[in-house]
Image (cartoon, rainbow, N blue to C red; front, side, top):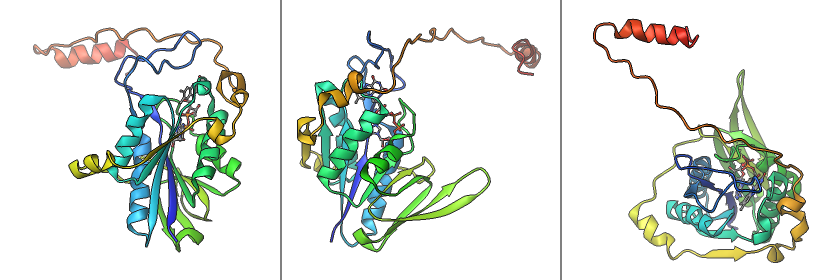
Length: 264
Ligand SMILES: Cc1cc2nc3c(=O)[nH]c(=O)nc-3n(C[C@H](O)[C@H](O)[C@H](O)COP(=O)(O)OP(=O)(O)OC[C@H]3O[C@@H](n4cnc5c(N)ncnc54)[C@H](O)[C@@H]3O)c2cc1C
């Protein structure tokens, strides 16, 4: 039997771009370029390595996001995933982490899975809670923040991994089906090859909305959110830095500057 791996991948605003809040204090996702969250590339990479070591495996990448989120799916498909699911619905606007976990869990159940792999956190929300919430909703074990991950024994087997903490490294395992999240120490993500990019164009991308997942609009979006952003103040734009020209006194000036800022 094929090992069914679902990788959750998030389309996030490009951190190098100009990011703003919309009038309703949600993240403005319309006027900003986005990309596959870098931390989710590690999850895709680990899925690919597990699949390469399995007798038979199939990788589905799953995202919730606007139309542009398909770009994140295409990137994951060009890295080597087999197929993709895109959940999009206007009523998702303002969905918080709890709502996001509901939609992901319903989509994962509908897709069918033995192993779910997520990133350790998204690079925009950075809450790091979604994998645990998804595992709870699915009623399966979770092994989070793994720096090393492998599967033994196929779909009825176990997922094993190493979790590095401040004082110890733990070797953990869980029976499948399970949810794991992987850290940025789990192994460099591969670059899509030209062949991979061309092949991705022909791979299937399924689109689902809330009706397809039997989710009521009130359960998600701003209405269903448990968390509310009361106010947000954008940080002032960065000012130009101080340039110290070394004309013999550079070191002294640098030390004086650092002392003035109370760094030394
Ligand atoms: C169109 C849209 C509008 C939104 N509006 C709001 C809002 O107004 N307020 C609010 O609080 N939240 C909103 N969200 C949800 C928010 O962006 C986060 O997805 C959610 O709050 C989870 O927080 P996080 O990203 O910090 O998750 P983390 O817990 O940091 O994410 C960990 C991992 O979970 C997976 N994951 C998380 N989100 C997704 C996703 N969307 N698709 C696939 N995998 C995912 C990834 O593998 C990720 O690495 C919106 C999302 C979308 C798509």
